[in-house]
Length: 354
Image 1 (cartoon, rainbow, N blue to C red):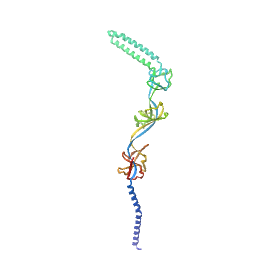
Image 2 (cartoon, rainbow, N blue to C red):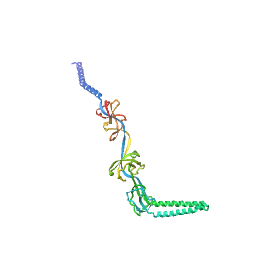
Image 3 (tube, helix red, strand yellow):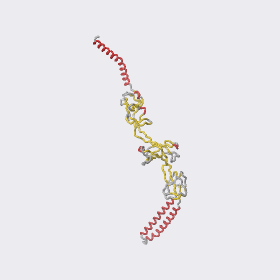
């Protein structure tokens, strides 16, 4: 066989092989094209929600100590030696009740002297006034007598006040607390010896770290739990925020007024104060909508023509009602919440709005 004939036979065998391959592959290609055509024609039913920003809440919980709304330190302005202690520690008192008495002997002697001096000055003024009217007493002498009368009146008032203040009384209703006081004990002037607690209201005192103090504001709502009272969810409101930090702990004192304290609550009890702080509006979506891909989280959204498209998102904090989306979704976007397992890029969707 000559070379020309061998070459012609080789070409014929190559043509037969190519035709055989085409005959084998062509039917499968036709099936794939048909499947794609059918898939594009049948919309996928999916549950869809419209994204709306919602206001989220941040919570801060601190250990709290209960204290009376008002704590009034009581002292004896002139001091003295105790002659009688009229109440017991941690006793309830009413306004005007006598709490303590000190020796008033010196005060009463001073009052007697002051009253005598006042009587003498008044008598001198009464005798001298007619002489001054007749010109027998100069104006300078009258001014001197009037000055002595004024001084005697002031000394008498001061002596009367000292006698009254030798008895310590309750300025208002409350609970009086103090350390041991005994008859014969000497009291230093203006040094508190008792504390009157106003039990008409209570506050919860907490110490807030410097990294969180800026997030709190007066009037923020809070809830208080007191284990000793077996109470939970008491409503409170921030009433004072300290501006001076503790030099050792770097915490700021914060007080919350307890709106409806339960009966039996006492100063010194401990509890847990949870401050509720509204944050800026954020987009919260159900966690089931998020698909984790190798390049990050993503969700399925819808275009205006109801075509599916995958959108990468940046997630924030997880919450009880979902997860916060920091970027990738905007208010008004439509999000697929169920049925996205059969979606592909630009797949037609039959939405069921929720």
